[in-house]
Image (cartoon, rainbow over the protein chains, first blue to last red):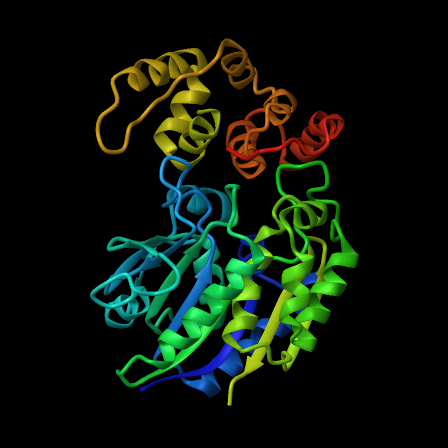
Amino acid sequence: MAEIVGVLGVTHNPLMWSNLRESVPEDLVGVTANFERFRSIVTDLDPDVIVLIASDHFHMLMMSNMPAFMIGKAPSMRAVHPNEVRQFGLTPSRISGDAELAVHLLGGGDLTQRIDFAFSDEPWLDHSSVIPLLFLTPGLDVPVVPILTNCNAPPLPTARRFAELGTVLRESISSFRGERRVLVVGSGHLAHELGGPRQFLGTSPDPDFDRKAVSWMASGDLDAVVDATSFERLTEAGNESYQFLNFITCLAVAQGRPASFAEGTPTRFGNLPFFAWETS
Amino acid sequence: MVNKLMWEVDRSDASLSAFKTDPAAFLDDWVTIGQSPVSPYPEGGSLTAVERDALAAHDYGDLYAMGVNPFLLWQFARSVSVPDEMTGDELISSFREAVEPHGYPDFHT
């Protein structure tokens, strides 16, 4: 049977990649240390597969065809799009998948889960998936099942729905008959703004939200975080803060356990999230 | 459809180059292609005169006020304006100045 060996939540800010390629600026020392800490956790957990909860940024999914939740079910998938090469210096690559587990998470032969997932047989991952993988598994050598969520094109699924997604993933991973050590990784932001008046302020657009967000994860208060993260409150935190919802999925996968590590690491790009849950 | 156009310009090197070279011609082609879409992923689309003017003029404040997706707008602005028109820091400043008066428009589609 498959076993969830751990749950992590990390930033996918692509500027971490472009700013950390040659040296470590002073304000990113904490981020570098946390990525090293989390990379060590991944090494110790020795997962067979990563179930990755990330938000496509209009690369695969556009308003012409926008699912709430999509599973990539392919044995191999492309990673990095041309504009991410141009803007962030990312390198196009291929990442192995786990189609057998992906089909099971989708519902098996029928779409029987409580979440009506969309699916892709040709997933093409963007920086929201690639940045966590590059920092946690630099060799990109652990197969991935991507779960792409709509956190960018409202109307969005509610926070309650993201929690339900986590519960469904936990149950369906646990019922998979194949032998797998499964690491669940969530990718997202705390308070974050892009394309609005509060972008690139040199600090978080909403430090109060960040403090509460870290507290919800540290205490494992699933009901509180669901109740407090309406679309309006997330917009108040910054118009790209919706990707925090992926961490609510992580908390639900972890059954509302208090995170063993929870931090909003301060940088000039805002406070960057690092969450870890032990599952056994 | 403005979101779709900004997306196309940012994601495709060829479209970005064509838009930067001759915005009017690119926008004409966009509308023409949109009138005869190819199934199942139609390219091109329709634009109002106001939308067309704002796109051609790189008027990020007007586009923002229309309720376009802010993420797509920033991606479009950065790809179109940096480095040919200004530096990244200059875009951050001018962009903020352009969008700030409009607060947070509803960008649901």
